[in-house]
Length: 412
Image (tube, rainbow, N blue to C red; front, side, top):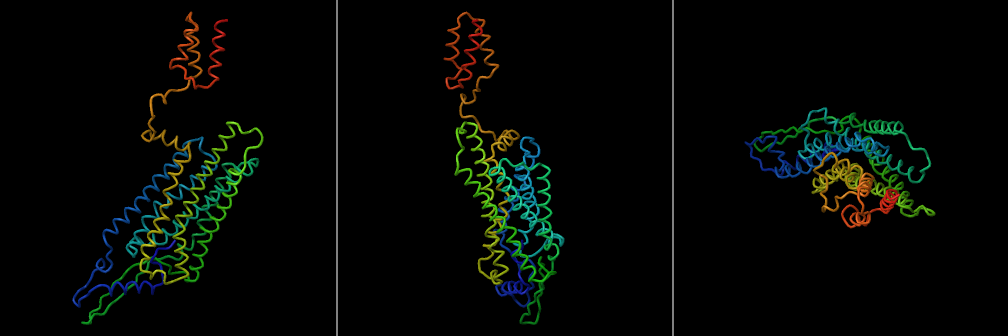
């Protein structure tokens, strides 16, 4: 989790020198900090809108996920507990990572308080670790439920221990960032023809403590354990589950409505989780590739359009934190119902009046029987009921049977 400008000091000097050479100076002109490092206002506005949008969606959307799951008793399952943990990690990214790291990379300097230099990358690394490790835990939990359904389910206490372990391991893995990163100034000077010297000081957030070789190997380690290995494990697990769910049929005569419904629900949950994992892999892949190139090929940042490449890769990675709530709303019927119950404005409008008619209940049946008891024309009333709006000919046959039994009882 490094900013695009975090190269060796000589790379920074090359960038500053190019900036000097691209600007016309006169011997009597002294340029301010803003003149030297001006960023087009249009670019700042555009990127601010893009980053601000995903930051807002990440915080609001994932906060709703946590709120709905934590306040709905029927949704407090082991899988949903892991999903809440994933949402919490995305909220942290939206609050502490997207806004601050973005401005530093855009302005190519560190204007924030010094303590945030090690803090922001540290928190971002923790959040990404928690996300991928939680996705792995979800995959393993679903693997057990589908391929080994007779094994004992993990209790909520065990799931809490797993989540606690995920956070502890994520923090330990991310410790090198607060150790190594510090704010430091880079001073550049230029001597003009009249002998005047112009100096400029620019602050950066980069490694000033640990040897560069150590940080190089640490970044390799992060890419492996933060992306490659977990993604391969998750892919293998979901392939096995897909083979079991889509490649086999329920044995014997068990293909009744209940079994079909359960199988359909399992497939729907697995589809949802596969989409979540695929989005994580797709969104983070370009930035992880850039991180590998940066530590293996020092001149990658000399590429003419590397700024555009980096911002697109970083925005795509950060945007992953705001997609999951929409996926849950599409594929998780229970989450969708809870969301619509708490926010009635999002309830779908009925297509027509007939679709709103409810099925006859037991109370309706008793009411019909009482009406018939008070009438002498049983056959006439029967025709009225079946030809009118009180019964639809498509209603469940069980209700019809109950009605005739009740009618027979009244006659007797």
